[in-house]
Image (tube, rainbow, N blue to C red; front, top):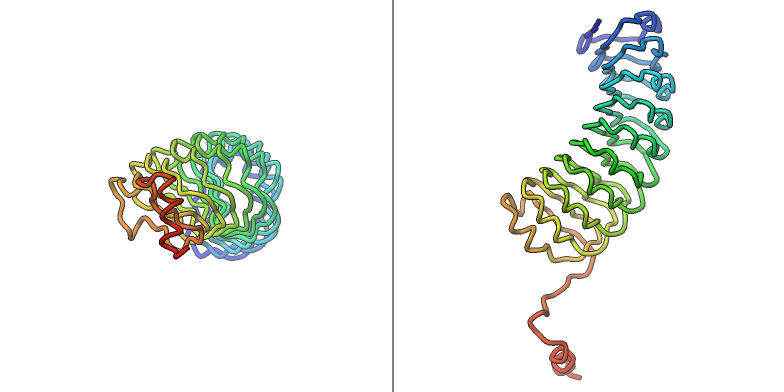
Length: 275
């Protein structure tokens, strides 16, 4: 049984009596004005699709959802949910899409989310998540959409992101990530949209970005990256200054001195400076 009550202007709380519908396989309540907490639905053990996004639900994400091991799609985005992402979500091994964005979630991204190897979409955008991106994020080898932008994430971008070879949409913008962009991003040959804007990333812009032959949009602006933009990126088929953005990086710019031998630089520079 699948119940679709989306966009029906529903108000009030989700009735806990829904848990008695043990044959329920899909519940679509998105885009209403529902309030209050998410009830315990653990008795609905056949539930495969749960869409509660775009409401006014509050409270924490109940641990009981982790008992719904048949879930393939879980969307709780655009609510007023708070607290942390349940550590037990790692048991939802059949999940293909997990959307928890645009809430007030805090704490770290649970490392056990990397056990959800069937995920094709992971969206945790616009929360208050902190701490590092799990080092084993590369285990999510089927990800096509990976969105963590507008959080408070810190630390490096794990080099295991190079395993996300099916990802086409990748956005870690507006966090506090630091360190270099790993050269393993060159493995992301299916990438179309790649965004790292407004972090604290340092080092050279990897030449390996030039392997993203399908890229149509790229934004690495507002970091501390060392310029210039590699020729490998400028030579991409869809490269255009309006859609490939690198402005406002505070790292030093490396000038091209490759045509001068080292001895010439040592001799000429003092003369040019009047020394």
